[in-house]
Image 1 (cartoon, rainbow, N blue to C red):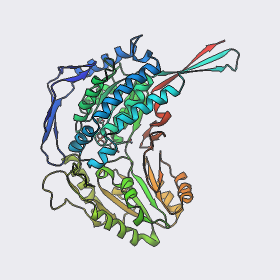
Image 2: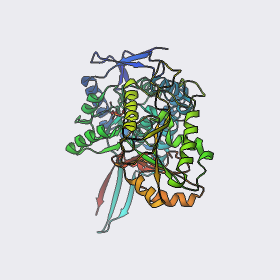
Image 3: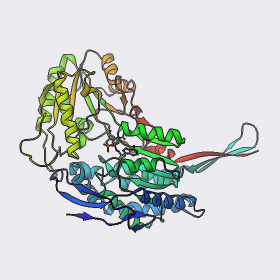
Image 4: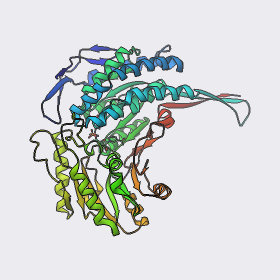
Length: 480
Ligand code: NAD
């Protein structure tokens, strides 16, 4: 089915774009056109920021509403999103190759679950707290919405990553300009339809599909009060530099090169479904995956054999097929990048035990076989850089101290996992890993707890009450 849009959703209505550019969307699986949308030009972004600014600054507007009144509007929004759940999953799968079974668990549910979650969190956190002043009288500490938010998201989990920002921002009373990635714009138009149906006030949510230059323009726009960014570390550094210059608050969720530490008592063969979610989810196009598998040297051969058998048995196919475990990568560019890393891994002396190429039965779509590299040193390029494809490197360690040291020897610090028969032992290792999150015998994001990265993986966090606080500004009113 072809999707064609002629207008942009700005200021609560569909308006003709200022620019003439268009974004063509193609299927990652068939390489055929899925449709096209207008590309937001700088003039459109000006209008979007002005609309968000006006909505935020209106003394009787969204930011001034009671939590309960915003909660009602957000309830309508969640209902409009829920109606479209399956459509979100299908649109995302078509565009970026995400297996539909994963899309149904993430993209279909993100908005309908996170919007009420954050509305509830905002209602249960009082906006004002009165403290006895330490110098006499009292002080009212207020949590105010931070203002107009520029939310910039990548293509890998476009809806989930949008709602990590949009849900808390709206619950806090902010207004938002959302810039989706050009690879996944169709689901953003579906989101706009839900905003319209829910009758959120004009300007509270504005959507500007465009590329990186437009993103940079939005980041530095004087009408923006806060930037919430998810994407690559390279782009994140640029966004951070700009926000540093402007002293503009910014949250950065960036890349990763996490470790999955297999301890010597782990029953890896019995944990493969959970291991899949922690290492290969979404064709390897997930920021938090443990792509460095750390295996005890005494069991190295067995671990490699288990992973090789498992990776070669995964079902590769059309992402819209229920049974597919590995779909195509998002684009030709991304496939070229992943193949480049595979070549580099071989050139640097690592050994492929399965995969390493394109599946023989697929002559269309950006497919790469799940690939296991053995004999990888942690200093190799494939162990240092984020590949963002279904490629895992198995690295040997001698004892737990060395495993911890290897896990922490990374420019990144996003996530990780520990695999063991003994949860307490796993937790003890997890405590020693310098990352924003980590799982023991699995890795599942908990929307009630903070998610973020350290080192080159980002600044600040999303989700949980902390993710709401990221869209609030503290103010003390002294009452001597
Ligand atoms: P990308 O950085 O190229 O683009 C991400 C978004 O930022 C897109 O919307 C893009 O148009 C925009 N953008 C790019 N340069 C910009 C700039 N200078 N100023 C403003 N906007 C700019 O990343 P990608 O290739 O689309 O996504 C994959 C990356 O995202 C991976 O590195 C992955 O690890 C990361 N990611 C991180 C998380 C997390 O939560 N930590 C989650 C998902 C993806």
